Amino acid sequence: MTVRLDEMTWFEVKEALSKPHAVILPLGSTEQHGAHLPLKTDSLHATYIAEHAAQQVVNKHNICVMVAPTLDYTDVSVHKMFPGTIGLKVDTLIRVIVDILECFIDQGFSNIIVLNSHLHNNCCMEAAVRTVAYQHPQAKLFAVSSVRGLGSAVAPGLLKGGTAGIGHALEIETSGAIFMEPEHVHLDRVIKGSRKIPLAEKYVGASGEDTGYGIIYYTGITGFEESGIHGDPTLASREAGEKLITAIVNDLVDIVVQAVKSAK
Image (cartoon, rainbow, N blue to C red; front, side, top):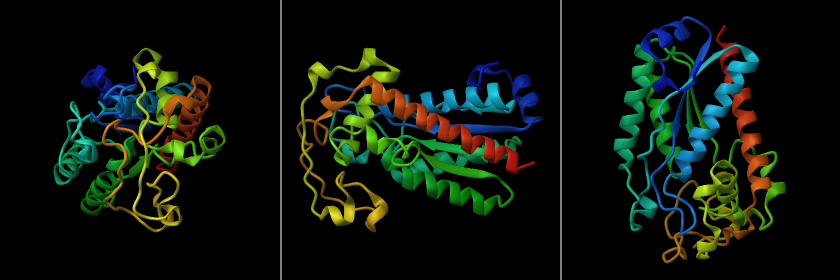
């Protein structure tokens, strides 16, 4: 049976809801990723990870997992000056996620997991999930980020360019894309960018976007205005992409299984 919610009939959904189950809402983006990656790169990651994790849970743990259609229009304000970058305002995105989550709850879905693969969606995702949790205290909700989160045990060892390779459309994202859809990756078109940050790495990390040092959000990163990216993605490889995506999928499998089992 398919794990994609939009490929199921309502009879199949009704049957799934009568069993131990979970539903995953992937969040991606329609956003520029340099000259070498497609606009759907974040959505590609979110969809692939969600569907492959769901299939593993179904096959190995006999738990029904449904993957909702990926939300492709999200917070892309940082890159809105690049053609093809189409998104929603922050307050709109929060309301959209809230409405979707409340629909799940109203229809009897449990173990609702929002999976984000676009860094700038993290705050909206958390705000939406917290809002719904306040209104529905009995609901089982999870906000999960595959960006700087899942797969963290293997990511550092895969980076040829160090932690700076984690940035937008660089080594990590490009490696993942090469593994999942190599036909849409064009390393021969790469325009290398740069990263200029107004704060010391002590507070924002080498990528300039690490929230683990105290700075949650700030403006002022420059250097990507011509290329759309923060550095050199040519260090990417299919091998690194496969190891990273596999680790992320395995982590999500573990989260889904634990979430469902704890609900029994």
